[in-house]
Image (cartoon, rainbow, N blue to C red; front, side, top):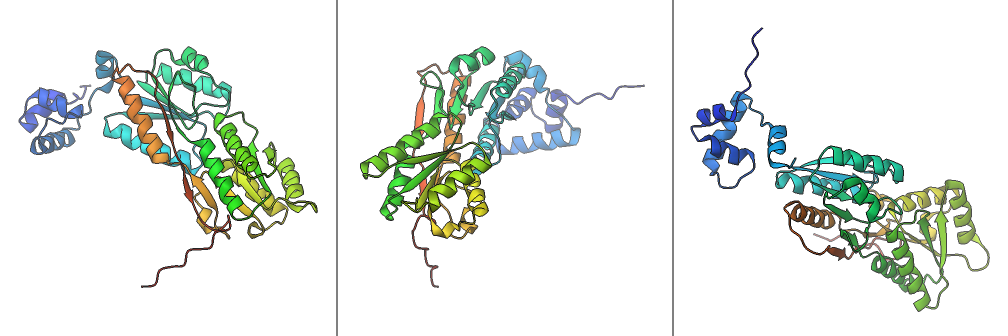
Length: 339
């Protein structure tokens, strides 16, 4: 039985009436090929069914043109938007993306980092699990460049993060401005630097206003329901507003409020991290949104600098959040424009 011969780059060059080096430049994403020549090459590739041998090229140049992306999960607005931007930016620069999740489990994170190294990715964008340190990451990835996003790994690694302290402080001050004198914050039990910095911003805003800070640490559904109900319904000094420290915490709070039969319009509420359905609730949820696209774009840019061999001190980028004012904080709804 005769083997079907796979078309080569020389076959494409003949069909497109150009040199094989021109085809090679175009396939690699080179910009020196004119639009007309690029069109002829693409037609020839489609007609012949040519597929570049990326494995052979990666062995030859020592690069796979692949970026590893390791996130906790993908089920919130911030992570979803960040991943989409990473994929778009990577593709624009001729890279593919290998996406994995660690579900906030340190052991699974170790396995996924080891998998990325075996796959010979050129660099990694990482949202580290709780209590991850640089030594652990380096032990698994060796010299593969890493950029931390959303959560810093310290001054020894490039990072692109939200100004978490400022986000929580401004949210707290906004609720205080609506005369919510007793604001309870709710956070997750994970020991994550973003959550710790948000708590610091909340506490210092409360201290500056001469108010007492109160924090509920969410561990499970029943415990949150009990503590939240107590804080909001006690006879002496009930909390009148809630500051949620993350997307997953906001989901848990909304569920607990429903179970306790406490209407959202009876309290003030601001969540750090926006939610895809926030504007559809009654009242609509005010939130501090993270600039997901900008964070992701900067993370890709910095990682590509590292993969290109740029050697400089680790870069720490801190971006402000954006307060999206809706009505759960006490703001009045914006009246629709009349045409």
